[in-house]
Length: 448
Ligand code: NGQ
Ligand code: ZN
Image 1 (tube, rainbow, N blue to C red):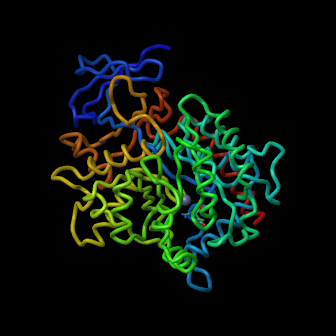
Image 2: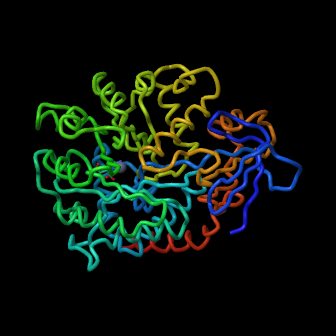
Image 3: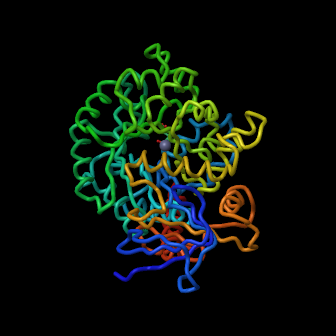
C-alpha cells in the first residue's frame, strides 16, 4: 500500500494543539509526524483523532424523528419504548443491515471511527432463533465492514421483563437468551471479528439480567468489556428499591466487581455516594446526551463527577440524531441550564471544546477496548478533518469550539485506519446506502 501524506494547519496531538503538522500514513497506521514542509501534501484546516461512539442501537435509526407526535396520554420513555418494540418486530436481517449501514455512514460523517453496538435484536420476529443463531450479529459485522467503521460488538444478554425475574413481554421476544446460548453467541461473534474489532458483552439492564445472570456472565467472560444500562429513569430506581431495597448503581456494585473494563450507560440518577463509587471504580460513564434529552431521562451530575476524577464517553444511543459536535454541545448545555453558569464541563481555564473532546476520546476508547485515540506515530490513522470555510479560527482550539458551538465549521473528511471514507462531508457510499435505507424504512412503515 502506498504511503499517504497529509498536512494540517492545526492538529490535536496528545501534548496539545500543534500548528503546521505533516503526517505520513502507511498500512493504516501513522508512521511519521513532522513539521509541514512546502505544499506537497493535501492540507486540512484542523485535524482531530476519530472518536469512539460508545453506545448505539443501530436499528433505532430507522424510526428517528418519527416518535415526536404527542399521544393521547402523557408520553414518556415507556410509551416511546412501546413504539420502539413495534418497529423492532418488523425488521428482517436485510432491513436491519440496511439501517445499520445508514447509521454507520452518518457516524463516520460525524467524526466517529468506531462504534460500540449494543446489540439485542437477535432472533426472528416470532422469537425463534434464526438458522444461524448469530445471523443478526453477522449483519452488524457486515454493516461495519461495508461502511468501514471499526466495531466493538456488544451482544446483549436479555432474559427477564423486569426486576425479580419477571417474565419477558411479547414485545421482547426477539431479545431473549438462555445463558449457554448467549455464551455460544459471544464465541461466534469473536470468530466474525475483523482485525481491530473487539467483542465484549452487555447484560441489558438490571431489569433484564438478574444478579445470578450478572455473576455467571462475569465469571464466564473475564477480561471482556462489559456494558450495562443503569439508572436511566426514575421508575427504574423506584422499581429496584421496591425489589431489593437498593438503588440500581448500589445493586450493580454489590453484585459484580465493577472496574475500568465496565461502561455504565446513562447512570443518570445517582446519590452522591453512588456517583463517587462510579468515579472511584475507574468505570466509564456512557453518556448519551441527545437521546437522554429526547427521552426525558434527566441530567447526569457532570461537574461533581469530573471533580472526583470520573471518566466519561459519548454514545448516540437511539441515533435519533447522529452527531459528535451535537452530543458534546448537548452535554455542556444541559449542565449549563442546570448550573446556571457557562463552560461548566471544563475543569481548567481554556477551550471547553478541547476539554470535552479529549475526555470523550479517552473514555470512548477505554469503554470500547480500542487503542488510545491519538494523532501519534504508531497509532491507527483514525482521523477527522474540520473545515473552517470562513478562515476565522485563529487556532485549533477556537476552530474546535466553533465546530461544537458555532454555525460554520464542519467535518470535511474522515479516515478510518487510513481509509479515506468521508470526502467533502459525505461518505463515499452514502448514495447507495441511503437508497437502500429509504426503501427498507418505507416498507416497514407501510406494514406497521
Ligand atoms: C434500549 N434504550 O435498550 O434500546 C433502551 C430502551 C429499555 C434506552 N434506554 C429499552 N435509551 O431500556 O428497556
Ligand atoms: Zn441504550
